[in-house]
Length: 113
Ligand SMILES: [Zn+2]
Image (cartoon, rainbow, N blue to C red; front, side, top):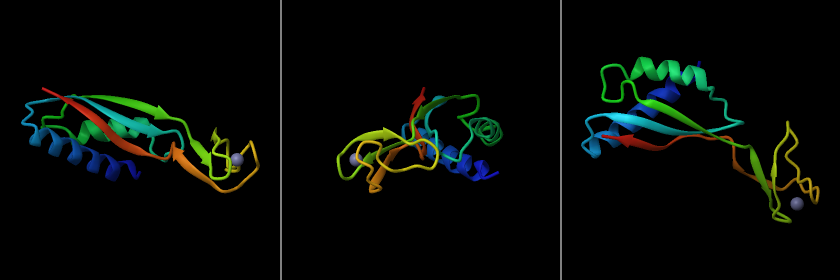
């Protein structure tokens, strides 16, 4: 259950940001969740509810924006969706590719009042 530590750091980022901006409440938290991230939405919601209790983030809406698992080819520049464990370029066959999105979990923005 590594979501616990992930949510701990998420809540501390959110509260710090809210405090810096003199917020009285956190209304909404926009998160980016990559499709290849090991983080799962349900336990994040569960731990968030637990950890945000009696903070100004209690009851905030969690909005997940899912990003596709994408890579780009270092040779021909093509961006493609990674299926399974095949990371090679479907266009030129090169295995020199760079992941551009899909493995992340992060706070994108928060809405405060
Ligand atoms: Zn290529």
